[in-house]
Amino acid sequence: MSNESTAMASLRDAADEVAREGDEPDRSPERIMQIIMQSLEDSKAEDIVTIPLEPGAALADAMIVASGRSNRHVSSIADHLLRKLKKSGVKGVSVEGLEHADWVLVDTGDIIVHIFRPEVRAFYNLEKLWSPRMPRNRMPE
Image: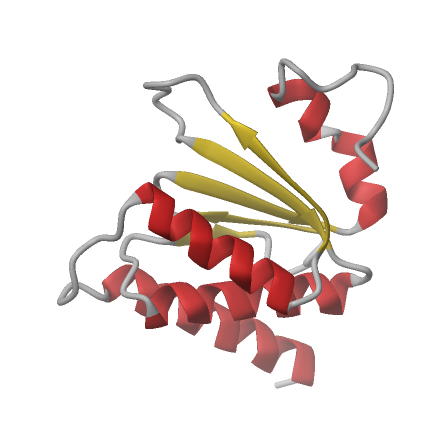
């Protein structure tokens, strides 16, 4: 098994463990947001943007969009976040996109985190799609 395959398996195991945890109570959306923001800052994620969604939205309470400098950095940010969520007792976390680490989505239920490589983030431009207050002709600085 290659180092990349081993790393991906490790990340998937961490996500599975977070999803299986059932002994600790769920955390409030506010607490989950604090955990996520601290993890992203600790991992040196770049251009972190929080997008509040409409109250009562079925999708989530908020989205967070962040960038990593490379596939490896994106993967590392996601791994750190999954471990922090697990340590904090957050249950039901799902993750997508770890295999290629161009765009990793971490869904806590209340908050959805998108971690991109900069080129992929610019292409999909989720800020423009989801934020009613974001200017439609440029990315956040």
